Length: 160
Image (cartoon, rainbow, N blue to C red):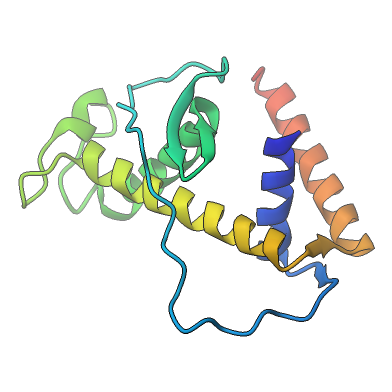
């Protein structure tokens, strides 16, 4: 339930289909500290579906292996298709992630850091949305329901 709420709030912010029940908070003199990461997963070539394992902790929010994998593989795919051919990476070589970038850091580590940053931003957005009492309006709830149904249909079609 908490995961679905987290997803719905993030999707709400992305779709712009939210109503705020309270006025926007006035800007504070200094921004709140960004959520801290207290654990670091070691992404494998093919993590298993979520079995309740916690991959990382962002502030007080535990991030499951399934959620982390979503971010990691979304960014991995984007990275590969944007830079793979330019960097001479072979899509048929499963070890391409372990090759070193110009600074010596592996692509796996670079993608992992990008995934952590994306998750931190999402958690921060969800936290601020909760503080500002942001909620979905009727149109937003319908759009989220349609999008979730589409995801579930795609997952079922792919036997996920």
